[in-house]
Image (cartoon, rainbow, N blue to C red; front, side, top):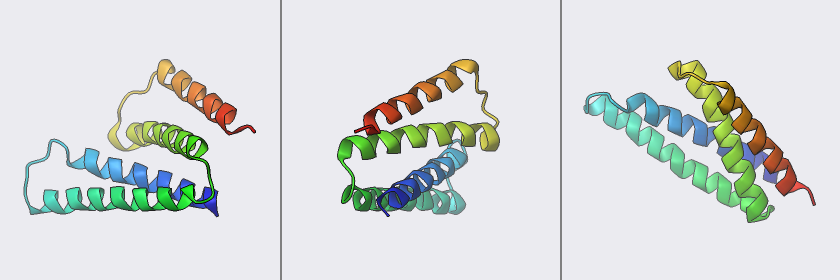
Length: 107
């Protein structure tokens, strides 16, 4: 359950940032405000889910997995949704992050 909460927090975090990215640069109006508000609300949901996950996980493990997972999924989302370019150093960086997460989570 603790890892399900953590994974949920990661996915909600990625959705939140994708929404915020989608409104950046758009003109301020009621649609913008609604989308921005949704992004902020989801950021709150992320914090709530992460806090629940901390009940069963150490902060070092939870935060490492949360940040690393978020970075990896944001990279994929930015490529697919926003056509941002990803180069070999980005992939290498994510690989290093994943290795780091594995090292932090090993007991």
